[in-house]
Image 1 (cartoon, helix red, strand yellow):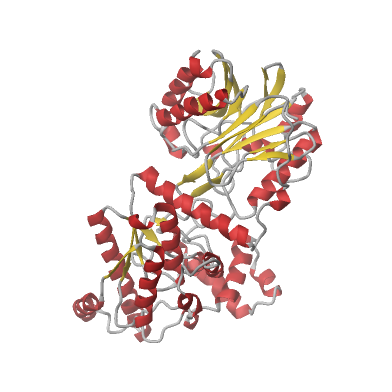
Image 2 (cartoon, one colour):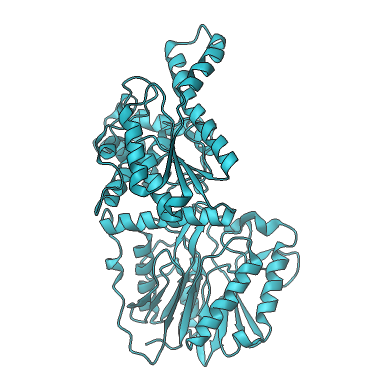
Length: 558
């Protein structure tokens, strides 16, 4: 039983769209009110969108958020008789003294402000750059119930023992001590594989520990490389999940004190690692990320270079799922080194997906380019240097051709590279690294194969031969990826330990990997940083993705 009729407004917001976000608050509040809610809760930083980053430094941006909040707080028909919890960046009471990440409780013209107490500065978070921490937790009375407000990170430092302790204070303990009967928690918690279960287990442990029910609303949608999965939850004082909003879609989810509640499935029922359900979850999240990236940047159509390999096949399948087959175009660009089966498999994929398909041969371009450039090659360079230059030239011709098509058509080019390639630099700057968004850039090659096979569970989407052929860049005769790289199961095993678990060389070797192979992979990981810094934004599905949360120097002596 919950002490109030609470509605969680799990909405997909656009960063910087203050007026549009404000209108979403009005619309969802009307819906919540019509369904009898006494309070409706919106995600963290509702009005600015999350994360606003340096928009917070632009003249007038915070003032726009303040003005929108003032207009929302004015007594009006749409908000009469219901409390509204809405997030916004707000200045200190003394102007010129910084900002707070705040949540405002609007009740019939009265405004109560809560400030976020714990500001994360790890991984993709940089809130200490923009905000000052609040001084004390905020309590407010809604319909006779003492309600405590905690904003996102404020619940991740609980003393119940379910999560790591990163800060000296525990806002939930302070709210419990002050007599809170219910906790309302606005969030913008980015998705990572396995995080939904950990998040819900942490909330359940906190509710049990303090004997206080929790209403937790999470953002949903994609903002640049960050994916927000939603899955807002109501958890009772005994730690049971009473309601769970769906993943990857907007929802208005309610719970009422009078109605009997059949508990939702436990956190353990959420997708398990390596399961088909987890594969489906990742694919759905990536599709939402693609769809939101295009929608929020003003594009409606996508372009994908199709090589006949698994990476471009999976990228195309995700794009079609996100946008529809009629708005995705695939282009194959064979040279003399491409096997006929590569073009056949690319065409078969396009037919399976129902997407447009074209062939743009690059052999003549390659020949002319080499004819003009090769006289200027350094005569003293090694034969290997010339071979590498000729191989990468093909990739750069393809990249230039795809960008020309993108410019002419208004289609946004999607990058098809995977995390294994990005990690060790097995990719070409200004060639196959071109694109506005790296759709599968946080998936290791073995994970790409796993998701591709999962797509084929019910019918052939990705041609079987694409999954069976040894992977190859096809930039020279008879080339295979394993000519230059360890087998992907070995490479990815080392990368998981080095990147995800942050293990050192000796620890990785102790897991049974050959010292020479480990040393080579770690050397490549360091030396390829300059490439990754110039790459497309990566849709993040792990806790250690390349991009905003990966902050290693390019020039280093490690």
